[in-house]
Amino acid sequence: MRAALVAAGFAGNVPLQRADVRDTELSGFAPAEKQLAVGLRRTSAGEPVDTLTRLFLMGLRVPVAAVAAALPDTGLGPWVDCGLIVREGEQVRALFQLAPVRGLYLAADPVWEGTLGPLHVMSYSGSSHSLALLSIRRKCVRALDLGCGSGIQALLAASHAGEVVASDANPRAVELTRFNAALNGMPHVTAREGDLFGPVAGERFDLIVSNPPFVISPDRTFLYRDGGRAGNDLIRELLAAAPEHLAPGGYFQMLCEWAHGGDEHWQTGPTRWLAGTGCDAWVIRVKTSAPAEHAESWVTCHEGDSPIEMADQMNRWINWYAAQGFEQFTYGSITLRKQSAGRPWMRFDAPPLLRERAGEAIEQGFARQDFLVAHPGDKLLSARLLLPPEVKWEQQLSPITQGWQVTDAQLRTTGGLGYIGTPNEFVMGLLDRCRGRLTLGEAITDLEAAIGEELDRDGVAAVVRQMVEQGFLVPTGVPG
Image (cartoon, rainbow, N blue to C red; front, side):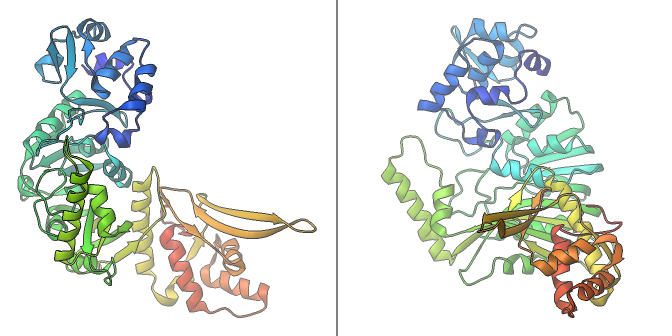
């Protein structure tokens, strides 16, 4: 079946482009009106890829003869037998969305029919994409995809893990993950049914990734969205249980959100929950939203709901938030690393940009943080630092009477996590001297001689520590 899809050209970005959809939009893709018209025009040539795009991505009924022509090596038999499609007279209808995603094939429940069932299994989404970017891709022996859904994170981990276990409380998710593993030729991916860490009791992994049903809501409508726990209980339970399932040096990475009061800092809750885990922790905030924005974003309306009914649903959520004392919702990721020695550290961050290779940047960030912990106070002055090639200095100039004047200057990191800094002349002078030859102390001394004044070394060290954290400076001998 996989070979037949490839032979039909149903691979890469071509089907998504013809259906006029991005991969991050697949979980909610039900083309209508102009988008449907665009998809119909782009697939009007009747090529095999057009037929399969209409069938598996756009959710349209397609003539039996067209599907048979698009899949000559298999015919309709295996597709009907496994439940992907159904024949209705001389038409064929897909029962599942099937999409090429990040070099893989992913089957999931579609949203073409309107009303979603409680065991609905989402396709690739924005949160799927974020976790895929953030995941550390180093070679490892065992990996776990906790709350696997359609299994996309397990399939991605299969490229660098010798064995991958996927688990979910939803039996439909488990079956879809098993099917997707088979369709992608990954026998080392297995799926188990059960809640949270229940299916892997007593087992340890080098990498655990999780995109759990993290939405804080008053409902228990959808298993993929509503975690069945109250308030922040889900995140607390996961953080408490994850360390015992990590091998030494192993990583646990999850997307999550937590509620807090309006006057409570977004770091307060995670700081309390992470204490005593025995793990290093890096919390990345993506956004903080008010109750109204949160409800408007997450309330899922049913087929036939009027605008008034939709608004009532949102107001019901907002009123429930008020009764619970929830005034803010912070969404982001938490990465834990199992400590084998030393005192665990915590880091809180809000990088402006998330790009490809973010997982690599996360792993490098852990190494740089280890370096900073090992070089407290004046010990940092003995370190040799250098500028990595990913750092760019961008200047904006405006015309003046004679020539040009710099009106804005920014430092940017162009790796997986994008940071932006606004340096002054002293910072730029210090960076010029951080090329791996001088120690930080020697570089400061040389800068002081050049400007003819002494610098506040404690203040300089604080700035340097932040620049090392964010990757503007890298200690010699430390990756990235």
